[in-house]
Image 1 (tube, one colour):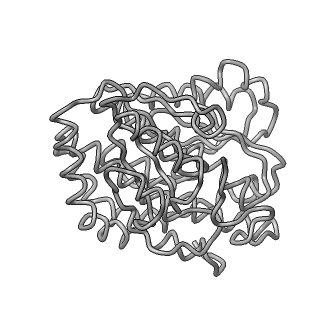
Image 2 (image 1 turned 90 degrees about the vertical axis):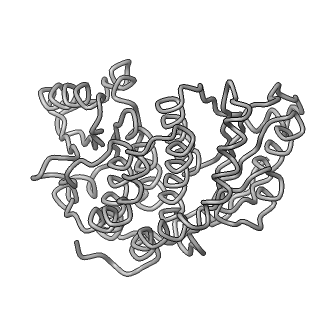
Amino acid sequence: MDEPAGGIASEFREVPDILLRQAKSASRPLAELVARLRHKPPQVVVTCARGSSAHAATFGKYLIERHIGVPVAAASPSIATVYRRPLQLRDQLFIAVSQSGRSDDLIEMTSAARAAGALTLAVVNDEHSPLAAASDIVLPMAAGPERSVAATKTFVSSLAALLRLAAAWADESDLAAAIERLPQRLAAAGDLDWRAALDALAHATSLVTIGRGPTLAIAREAALKLKETCDLHAEPFSSAEFRHGPIALVAPSYPILMFMPTDAAAAGMRALAADLQQKGARVFATGQPKDLPTLPPDHPDTDAVCLIQSFYALLVEIAARRGIDADRPRHLQKVTRTR
């Protein structure tokens, strides 16, 4: 796919090399983390993140619940920053995910969790950030400087870091092997041609993205990126949740972007896609060679990561078609600090 020059257009292409670096830098902290988790297994995992990192945390929730069987909940940082209420987190695992590691609410929530006795993990790109300093263990994204305001390579590298955690904690050799193959597959995924959806999405005023299981986080990230870089309203849903009310949005030619999983959730997604097409929606589903081609399935969890890489290549084309500089979204800055 021919792409305009710019931060996003080049940065997401760096991901394969990033993952090779990450494999080395994450080895020692990951071994320490897994040893501590096995010595004192948590009964619950709590995540804390904002923006794209929150979608990465959603991916982590799926991985941990699916492969470990431990429930995962998202923390509300305002409990620490506004309401000053300590949580009962002794001996539990607390995971903060952040590109910059400099948002005050994440730092304060992590510090509060650590003070409450939680084992705190920072999945962060800046290993010298305040968030890293506030955490017991740092799992590096290893993405290097990210120039574009909208996160791409740090999002994918955070997914990879969480994949490594799940594979090591669950001692799943199949997933570990798939992670080793992921850099090469991501390079190939970025070259897939998704321009069959370009005209419909570039001229849309609103659309829906849908996923389930490992692709729910991908649908959420895609919707955020369409808002951030294309000035295009997009809302993400799980395929199950979409039937509980939002399906009323569907009208003739209404665009719907479906990120199809390659695991047991696929059957329900295919049934929904067929239903939406009967209702007249313009459905673009991954895995359809004429619309959104994908790589041959390898492992459901790493297959999902490949989908966002293909989407990023389409994203820069949508922004260009809409006359928007994807690297300078209005009202946004690279580091957002909230309390």
